[in-house]
Length: 61
Figure 1: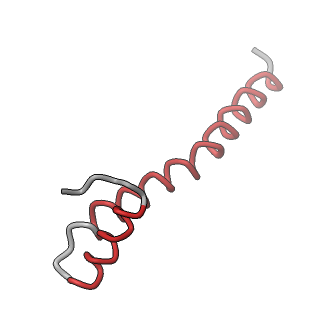
Figure 2 (figure 1 turned 90 degrees about the vertical axis):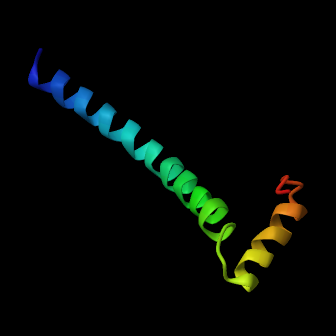
Figure 3 (figure 1 turned 45 degrees about the vertical axis):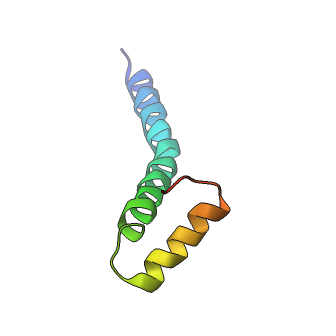
């Protein structure tokens, strides 16, 4: 393999990772919102998330 081929392969891998990072962060944030906020014991926060789940027709009980 030449140096150009190795660099090209590394650049493609770097670009693929850069494209996946926002999706991974969005999924992590969404999971936090669903699980972390949905099961909190603070009534105002729990009720707000509960209302949002009903608004999106997400079954919660």
